[in-house]
Length: 309
Image 1: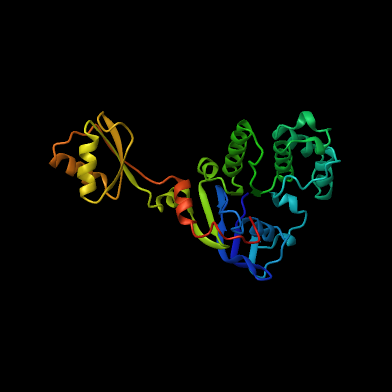
Image 2: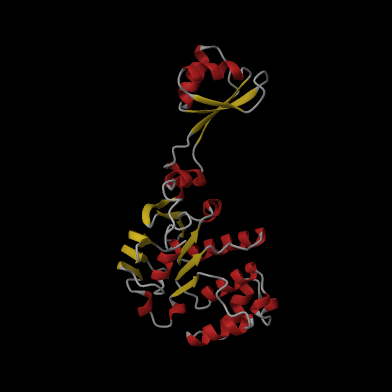
C-alpha cells in the first residue's frame, strides 16, 4: 500500500529569504516518520511544496515518483492536514467532508466512517465555527483519512488536543504505519515525537541535519552523564573534580546522596572510587534524550526566521 516520498535538492526562496535550501531526504512506508525543526526551519514550506501548494525555486518533491499535482483525485493518494483552522466555519462537519468526498470520487459512506473514527460522529451536524481547536484537528484528520490514502502528511497535528486526544493520535499514526502506509508528521514537540515516531527527518535553516532513526539521532547528542550514589558525596565529588570531571550533587553532602557526573565515563568513576576506598551504592550511565539531542544539534538554527515553520 505504501508509497515513497522523495525530496531532492529542494530549494524555496522568497525574495532574499531562503526558506528551504538544497533539501534531500526520503520517507518510506511502514513507519511513522517525524519531521522536526525549530520554528522557522522550513517544515511547513516543505510540506506545501510536496502538496503542490508552493512551487519550488529548484529541485523536486514527489510522492510515488510524481508531483502531487499529477495525481488525479488526490485524496485517494495523499491525505494531509496542514492547518486545522483553514476551514469554513459556517459549514457543518458532515457537509464539509461530503463536499470533499464528492469532488474526489469517494463514496458517501466514508464520511460517516471517518467521523466515527475520529470521535466526531455525535457533532457531525454542528457548524464548524463552534468547534474547539482540538475538534478542528480531529476534523482535519478525518479529511486526511477520507480517501483511505497510502500517504499521510500532518503538520503539528496534536495542537489543541487534550491528553486523551494526544494518546489517540499516537495510536492512530502507529496503526496507519503498521498497515503499510507512509506517515509523515511535522512537529516541534520533541517529547511527542519520542513517543510516536520511529524515523526522523530533522532540518534547521532549511537544511538537512539528520535523516535516521529516533534512537540513532538521540545517540548523536553529547549529553552523556554518569549517575553515582554514595554515602560520601563530598569526598567523591572532590576526587572526581580533581581528575577533571564536573559534578552536581542532588542531596545534602553529609548524607547518602547522588552525583551527576559529566566529562568522565562510568568505568573511570568506579576506578577512582575504589582507589580512594569510597563505597558506591549505584553507578549508571545516562544518554541524551531526543529533546536534549535536538536542542544541541539545532542550536545554531533557532534564531533563524525563514518562510516556513
